[in-house]
Amino acid sequence: MNRLLEAFEANFAAGLEVGASVSVFHKGHEICSLHGGFCDSDRTAPWDKNTLSLVWSATKGPSSSCVLHAMQAAKVDLTMRVAEFWPEFATGGKEEITLAHILSHRAGLCALDSTSATAFDRASVIAAIESQPPVAPIGTHSAYGPRIYGYLIDEIVRRLAEGEPLGDYWRRVFADPLGLDFWIGLPRQEHHRVATMLSARIDELPAQASDTFAKAFADPSSLTRRAFACPRGLGGVASMNTPPYREAHFPAMGGIGSASALARFYSILAEECSGRDDGIFMSTTRGWLNSRLVQGVDRVLQKEMAFAAGFMMDPLDGAGQKIRQLLGPTTSAFGHAGAGGGLAFADPEHRIGFAYVMNKMEPGVLPGKRCLSLVEAAYQDLVEY
Image (cartoon, rainbow, N blue to C red; front, side, top):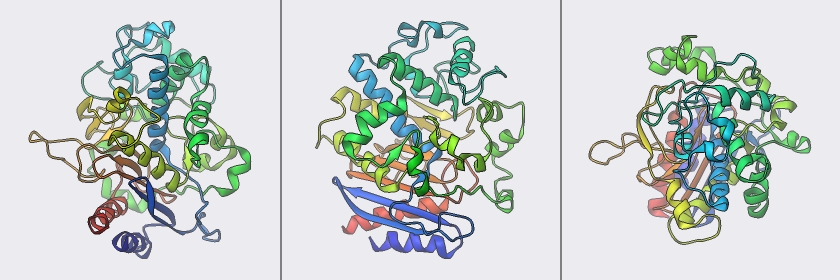
């Protein structure tokens, strides 16, 4: 994987990284694992193969897999109305919202009107969700829920799996049996391995000044700003480096793990979706992983987006060609990006699992040139592999 190594090193040479890891699995085997840089802003703690990183919204991939597995175990499908197993949900015009609506961000529940619901008080957020009318039309364009999505799917898992929290479900069904060094709620004894997240520099922000997302985010009254601001009680990037946040079960944006663990997870999904393995998901459930349920300009992210059941996919044009290649060249690839530039995805056609994690965040909705250069280099290497 010479081109991937060159691209990885070039990001450091250009000053784009402080610490980072990238992993590529092919046909079920890790063929490249790179790490470098430092875990802290003072550059005193080297980033090694055991370093863990907060992956922000890339957590949504593993978390959504828990929902799909719980649905499979409960023998329910995407068409089921949420109110059928969560009766308190059926208020405020939400009676017809289905699991498909929730998982593809089409339920109109990206933000809350409540000012009393706080991030560490799960019960207050669930109560607010139950009374909340949709803030965007149901079932049409997506309205991405950066934070609230996690509370929604956690409650869905609890309702389908006899009260088991999603973070515990992840460990029992996925992480422990598969040996995945990825956590949704990190035990205190593992904190010493976690890199410190570093927010984007102010001098990097002007490049985003014309971006529609940046403009919407700067408007306190916009749906974009509201979606990223609730529930209350979550501080800035620095707060996510503290023990209470690392230990909290935040299924939308609190996952902590290694690039190798995420790449292996997606490699397993790629093998199953390619028909070469069987174990986690039944055939019907596998189809939900990378079947586009919605595509269009997302009301929150302000960009053309496509979502399967809990996963991002690259949007297509009218001829079926990719509008962008964040997840590589194939249309069947699925995964999820994380704030600051991280990414993890599966490519069933090429039987690839890919993950890139870092601690120096960059501005923007989707990963930028650091990550894209790694994805491109990985595929160039695989042509020759």
